[in-house]
Amino acid sequence: MKLNNLDFDVLNAVANLKNIPSGAVNIRKDGEAVVRSSSSNIKISSHPEHGGLVVEIKPGTKNETVHVPVILTKPGMRDKVYNTFIVGEDAEVTIIAGCGIHNTSHSDSRHDGIHEIIVKKGARLKYAEKHYGQGEGKGKRILNPSTIIRIEEGASAELEMVQIKGVDDTFRSTVAYIGEKGSLKIIERLLTHGKQRAESDINIYIEGKDGNAQILSRSVAKDSSEQVFKASLTGKTSCFGHVECDAIIMDNAKIKSIPALIAEDSDAVMTHEAAIGKIAGEQLIKLMSLGLTEEEAVETILNGFLR
Image 1 (cartoon, one colour):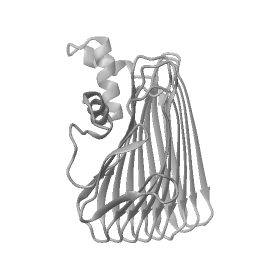
Image 2 (tube, one colour; image 1 turned 135 degrees about the vertical axis):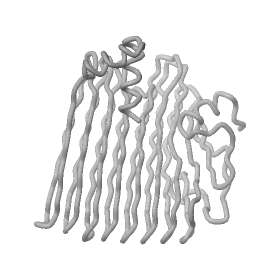
Image 3 (cartoon, rainbow, N blue to C red; image 1 turned 45 degrees about the vertical axis):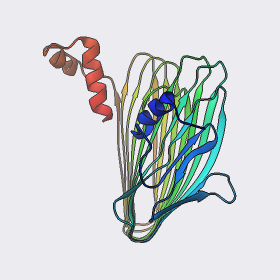
C-alpha cells in the first residue's frame, strides 16, 4: 500500500509530515502498517498480544524523535490499536503521534487508539498527539484516544493533546501514575464546531514523594457543539498538583468543567483555576481598528488563544 497526496495532506495536518522522515517511524493507514523502520536507539516491533506496536527507546538515548501517526481514508473504516512505549532510563525522546480521518461516505469512520507509556527512571519524554477530521461525507469522524502513562522516579513527561477541527465525536481518556520526584505536564487544546461533542476525562495519581503534575486546558466551542472537561488530581503523599481550564464559548455551544482535587496527605498541595466566557468586546474593537474585519479579528483571537 502506497501513500498518495491525500495521505500526505492528512499526515501533514496531524504530524507535520510532508514526506517519509528518516529514523524511527511507523505510519498506519486503514488498519495496516504501511511504513515501518527502526533506528539504532529506537526499536519498533509488532505488539505480541494486541496487534499494535511496541516502541522501545534504549536507555541513555538523547534528542531523538519517533513518528507513529495513524490515518483513516477508507469509507466506514473502524480501527482499534494498542501501542506500548517504553522510554529507557535517562533517555530524552520526542514521540509524534496523532490521527487523521478523511471520510467522504455516509458511514461513520472511527479510530480507538490505546497508548500505554512507561517513562523509566530519570528519562525525559515529550509526546505530541493531534487529531483532525476532514471530508464532505455525512458519516461521522470519531476519535477515542486512551492514554495510560507511568512515570518512574525522577522522570518527566510533557503530553500535548490537540484536536484541530473536523472531529465529530471524541472521548479522550488519560490516566497517569507519578512516582517519587516524577513530573507530568498535560497541555490540552481543543476546538469544536457544528454539532460536535468532545469529552476529556483525566485522572492523575501522584504516588511518590515530591512528585508534581499540571493539567492546562484551553478550548473553544462554536455553533451548537458541546464540551465536557473532567480532571481529577489525587495527591497520595507530599506533592504538588495544579489544574487550569480556560474556555471560550460562542454561539449556542455548551461547556462543562468538572475539576476534582483529592488530597490524601497533609503535605499534598492541590490547586485549581477555571474560566469560561465569550470573547471580550474590547479585543474585537482593538483588532478591527487595525483594519481587520470582525471575522478576521475573531479568528486571530481564537488562533492566539489555542496556540
